[in-house]
Length: 108
Image 1: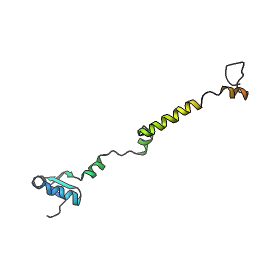
Image 2: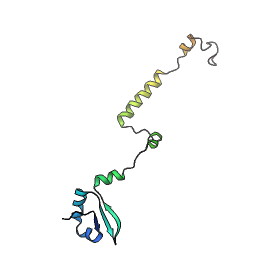
Image 3: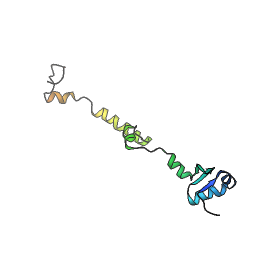
Image 4: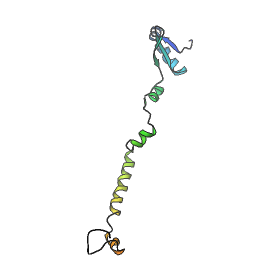
């Protein structure tokens, strides 16, 4: 078998198994029609790499957080703890004299 990178449509149809073997051994194979390149046959791993959209830094920073279920559970626990441990500390403010305990209109 002569190794080739370009195949005419008719030849590629007739020798498709050979074209596939060439893809596996040599890489992408170009299909031509009337001398013009019209298609490329690539290995599935290469296709998936090319078809997967790239995420640039801007998309990562502006996009939603991509958490798995375990991370979501951890974040929920942290949020629940934050809500309970940061309850208003009214007595502390009064002891420091930050709030007039005779007036409920806030700090002086």
